[in-house]
Amino acid sequence: MKGELLLETCEGPGIAELKAEQSCYRSIGVEHHAVNANDYPFSFVEIELK
Image 1 (cartoon, one colour):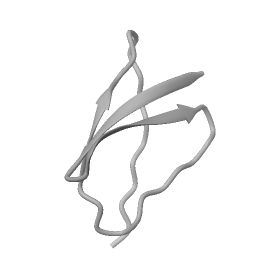
Image 2 (tube, helix red, strand yellow):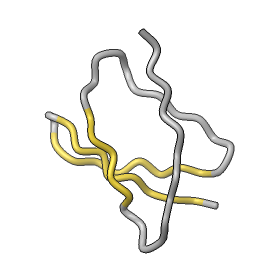
Image 3 (cartoon, one colour):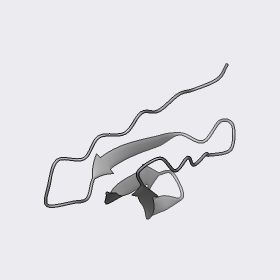
């Protein structure tokens, strides 16, 4: 399954396209708010390392 997340950051909005079983990452310290940008329910797991 594919899905899109709207990432709201201090640099402006952007779209992250995600696929099942695919990982992605953001640089350390990037503040963001992830919003489901699909017409259907979409779940993801976010892990923050500190």
